[in-house]
Amino acid sequence: MTAPGESAAGGTALSVRGLVKRFGAHEVLSGIDLDVPAGRVTCLIGPSGSGKSTLLRCMAFLEEAGAGTILVGGEPLGFAETPQGRRRLPPARIRAVRASIGMVFQQFNLWPHMTALGNVTEALRVVRRMGRAEAEAKGLAQLRKVGLEDRAGHYPAQLSGGQQQRVAIARSLALEPRIMLFDEPTSSLDPELTGEVLDVMRGLAADGMTMVVVSHEIGFAASVGEQVAFLDGGRILLHGSPRDVFGKPRHPRLERFLDTYLDRGAAMLA
Amino acid sequence: MTVDWGLLAEKLPDVLAASGVTVAVWAASAVLGVALGAAVAVARRFGPRPVDLALKLFVEVLRGSPFLVQLFLLYFGGPFIGLSLDPIPAGLLALTLYGSAYYSEIVRAGFAAVPAGHVEAAACLGFTRAQTVLRIQVPEMAVLVLPALVNMTVLLLKETAVLSVITVPELTLEISAIGSETYRFVEALTLLALFYWGLVEACGGLGRLAEARLSRFRFAGP
Image 1 (spheres, each protein chain N blue to C red):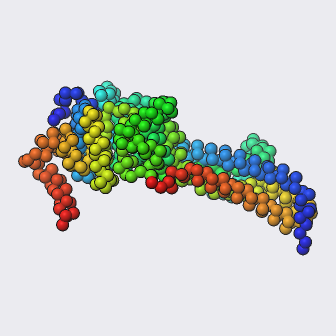
Image 2: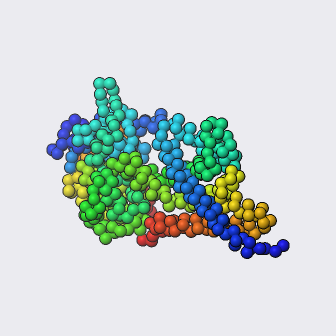
Image 3: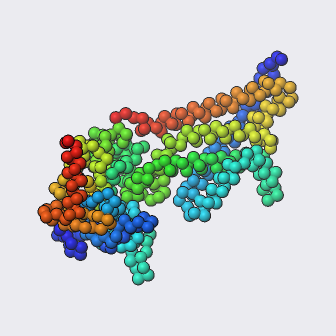
């Protein structure tokens, strides 16, 4: 477990301090402090509306927090604290910091007008200005990594959900990010397809990728996660190793949350 | 009444020259109209609020009055504000502005039809906003907006007939003149209708070709 301020062996890849996010009058995040240790898997769990996805989206700078800081490899993401106050950084500076972050979405968000290979190579060509041959070689290598080299010429509409999500992971990996963020990556997949995506994620974790995963897959969080944060009402209620968080005696709020999973399983069997 | 097609065949060279003017003005105003309309849509979507409101007014005004009125205002009213244009440039300008208002609404709907997540994915990968528009949003919306663009372009063709009132030497003016000259109005107007119909069909055919090519990815089976 890494408490805020304390570093893991590999250092801190990303740190969040005092993060506050409001949507109108509703405060979604009420002062979040979290360190993401490098080379480890951090899982964010919690009931819907707890703020876990919003926190992840803030780390990807898809949401702009109203207060607080996010440091990525020591560099401020989006906003810098200056003597004159909190200032938004110029777009180029924001893109530079974001370049070290990959994001995987619940809805995959592949571009439908491009093949699997096109999706993976597009950013290499457009953002990195790589030549076609080099980008395609790299793209194919990434597709091979997620087991989809033979689907390179398929459009997203021709792929299963699990395959689309693996292409989306390959698309992010192609830019060689230092941190990968996963926003409920298996929530729109049926259980059979969930496995193939989780396998790819396990492989990434084994390779030492720094990962932050928002997931309803409690089993994945407990087995692959090295750090678990349980969010409730915009705060991190529990935080530590899976053993610390899930071990008994459990916090009553977590117990209630986990019960909803058991209920669902029981209802299915009845 | 007898139909004298031979007489019309005699006038064919004049008619062909006039149809050249119609096609040229139409094509130019469609291309310029789409370009201006796209620029308006982009400025409204990404520009500051006052720009959006000003351009909304531009669109509403152009959509809110008949093309004939706009053309008269530009051609006869223009000189009062120092804008004296010959018939063809005046007609081209009026048609481009008129078309751009409708085209901009089509492109605006196209932007709205691209899922926000596809744009977020590009942002996460480090695309600039311009790169996202050009590489992701425009190609993705193209297949969605193409039928509407073709439809508007067909309407624009038929509005070129209105340019005859400011003496642009296009099809309608030329063929009406032949009608007056020969008192063969039925033949003349039938021929005129056939010309427009042929152009509309050609435009529709091009549109279907483009649609088939652009939409390969949507209908491809697994």
